[in-house]
Length: 133
Image 1: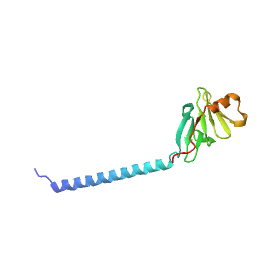
Image 2 (image 1 turned 45 degrees about the vertical axis):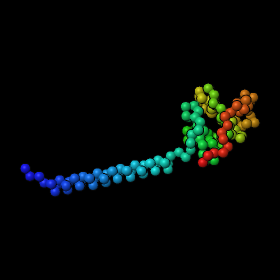
Image 3 (image 1 turned 180 degrees about the vertical axis):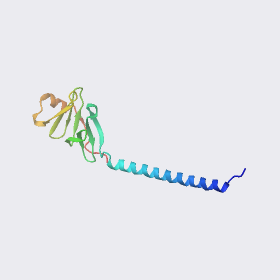
Image 4 (image 1 turned 135 degrees about the vertical axis):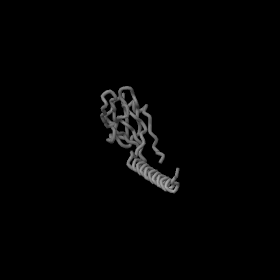
C-alpha cells in the first residue's frame, strides 16, 4: 500500500490556514459587533425603576432624568418616592405623579401641590447632587 505523504502535508497545511483565517474573521466580526454595541448603546445608567420598568430615573454625567421608555418626562430630578399605587418624582419646579395602576403620569408645578403631596416631598429619597463620573 502506497501513501502519499507530501499530499497529506499539503492538505493539512491548507486546512490549518483556512481554519486560522476563519477564526480571525470571526474574531474581527465579534469585536466590530462589540464596539458598535458599546457606541450605540444607551448613554445612561438606570437608577430607579417604576411601574415594572416603564418609567425610569436614569443617570447622565451631569444630572438625573425621568423617562417613559425613551421619552424624557422630567430633567434634573432631585427626589423620588415609591408607593404601591402611585409614585412621585420631583425636580426644583415640577412634581410628576406616576399612576402605577393605569400606567400614566401627570405633572404639577410645585406651587399647585396639596398637603398630602407636600408630606410626600418631605419623605422623598433624594438623589446625590454630585455625580461620580
